[in-house]
Amino acid sequence: MRIIGVSGGFGHEASATLIVDGKIELIVEEERLSRRKYAREEAATRSVLACLRRFDLAPRDLDALAISWDSSLDPSNDRMIAADRALAAARGELGLDDTPAFVFDHHRCHAVTGQYMSGTAERCVVVVMDGRGEHASTTVYLAGGGEDEDVVAASPLTASLGTLFAAVTTYCGFGYGGQGKTMGLAAFGTPRHDFPELSPDGLGFRCALPAPGDPTTGHRAVYRQWNDICAEVFGPPRRPALSLSDRLRPLRSGDFAPHHADAAASVQAMVEARIETLVRRLASEYPGLPVVLAGGVALNCSANGRLRRVLPDVDLRYLPIPQDAGVSVGAAVLAARRLGEATRLPAGPYQGLGWSDAELADLLRRYGIGHHEPPDLAAEVADRLLAGEVIGWFQGRAEVGPRALGHRSILASSLDAAVVDRLNLEIKQREAWRPFGPSLLPDAMDKWFPVADAPFMIEAHEVRDAAALPAVVHVDGTSRPHCVDDRVCSPRYVAVLEAMRRRTGHGVVLNTSFNIDGEPIVYTPDDALRTYFSSTLDGLALGPFLLHRSG
Image (cartoon, rainbow, N blue to C red; front, side, top):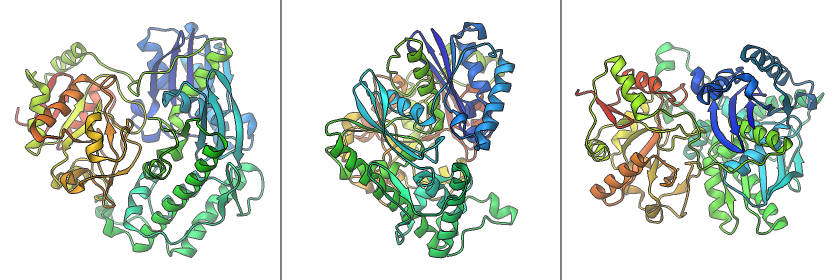
C-alpha cells in the first residue's frame, strides 16, 4: 500500500510523507525544495512530487492522500480555506484528483507524529502544544500501544502558549518564525511579569482575556491583546531599523532595550512554568507512562531542558520534527490505519532525500568543480577545524526538522570562542548573540551534561566546565547537545567526532545548520555548493570529497 500524507493547512510548513507497505520511506519539507523558509502559503506540491519521483511512482499508484487538517471543524478560518484551495490546485497539477483522500484533525496528526517520531511504541501521553489547531491550542492524548488516540483534555484556542510566545516575538521586533530568537534573547533579561491571564486549568490552560466572535476571530483578538499587554507592562515595542545599513547589519544584544529582553525572559519563564505544571499533573494522573511533547511549542529548547531537570522521574520523550512540518507523518499513519495497515516506527531522524557518492562525483565532474578525495576525510576535517577553519558538511539522507544533526551541518571547533562571531556575523549573517550547540558521542555526555542522551538538539542543559567549550555555551551557561546515535547517523560524521576525540580528548564539535540567515537548511548538493560559494566557509565536505578555498 502506498500513501502520501501532506501538511500545510495553517498556511505554513507544508510537507509530504510517503508510506510504502507499512514503512515510512520519505519525509520531505516543502521549504527545503522551494527555498522559502517555512513555505508560507505554499501547498506541498514539490514535496509530493519528490516522493513520487524518488520511488518511481505515478499518481495512479497511490492508494490514498492523507490531509492533516480539517477545515470543516472551523469554517471561519480563512487560512485553512485557502490551504484547501491550494491543495485542490496542487492535486490537479499532480494528477491526484482521483486519489482517495482522508482528512484528519490537526492535533491528532501531531499526536501520532509525536508517538512515531519519538520512537515510542508503548502506550504514552502526548501533549500537543502549538499556536492553534482547528478548535484547540493544547490537546492531551493517550496514544500508542496499538490503540487509537483518546483525547484526555483540550484547551481553547484563546489559551494558547504558542500564540502568546508569538505575540511577544512580534513585540521584540522579530519577524515571522522568530520564536527561537526570543528564546535566545531571554537569557539577557530578567523575568518580571507572569502573564496571569493565561493560567493552568486542570490538564490544560484557560485564558481570561475577552475573545469575541467565532473561534478564529477570538484567537486573533487575544493575539492583539497580548501585544497591548506587553507595551503596557514593559514599554514600547522594538521597531525594526529604518536605514538600509542598519537593516542589513546583524543584530547585537545592545540593539535591544533592557525591557525587550525582560519581555522575552518573562514569557520564557512563564511558558516553562505552565508546561511544568501540566506535565506534573499528567505524570500524577498517568504514572509510569512516557510523556511525549509535540507541536511547535515543543521546539522550545530551554523549556524542554528544564523539564528534564525538574522532573527527573518522568519519562520525557522528544522528537526531531514537532512543528507543523511533521504532521504529514501522522496523517499518513492514520490513513494507513484506516485502510487496515499498521506502520512501523522509523529508524531515526534521517528520513529526507539523499544522494550517493557516485551521484555527487558526477555532479562535481559535470560542474567542473575542483576537489579532492582525502584518504581519511575525518582526520583532515578534524585537523582543519582545530586550525580554526569552518567547514560545510553534506552527507547521506537529510535530517527532518529544524535542527542539523550531522548530515546538513556547518562544523567548527568548540574550543575557539572567536569562531562564534565569525559564524554569526560573517558566515550565517544573523544576530551576534545567537548560540551554538555541540555534537558529541554518547560516552562523552556524562562529562559535559547532566543527561545521558539528547539525540535531536532540542533540549538546553547546563554545561559542566563551560569554560572548556566556549564556542558552544550560551550566556546563561547552557547549550543544546546533539548526542550522536551511531546506529543511524552518517559513519563519516561519527568518524569526525572520533578523530576530534583522539586529538582533544573529548571529541566535541560545534554543529550548526548549513544555511545562512533567512534561508532553509541546504537540502540538495546544488544547495550546498551554492551556499558554499556564496559564503566565506573555508571548505565543504560533500560526501567523501573535500572542496577548499586553497584549491
